[in-house]
Image 1 (cartoon, rainbow, N blue to C red):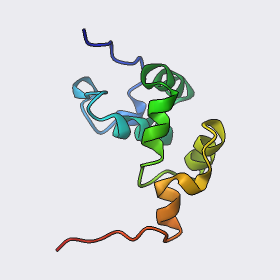
Image 2: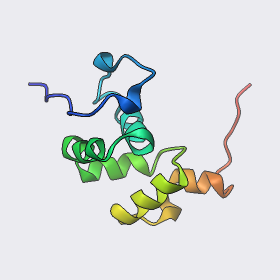
Image 3: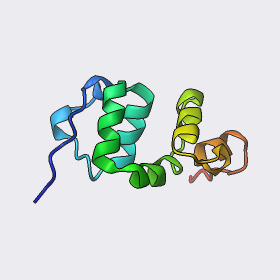
Image 4: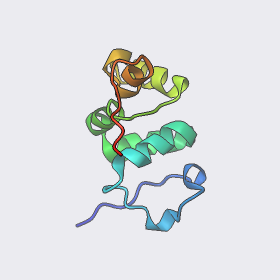
Length: 100
């Protein structure tokens, strides 16, 4: 049995067909959009739907979070900023390889 979609607003998903979003297949993208452009109620619903541990697994792997989102996530989820991929990228600790 498939779980019901989270009850979130369409605000963070303005550029895609909201009805076609697969919330389980595109977990990281959904979480990122909610953190960057969602409402507080979306964030609460996201925590209920995915659970704290799954969110923590995903956010530390994100390539980009705004400074506000990064600081909030670091504080709320009790994860040092240095463990976030986006923080390491911004400090030049991780080099991206460009494929030709």
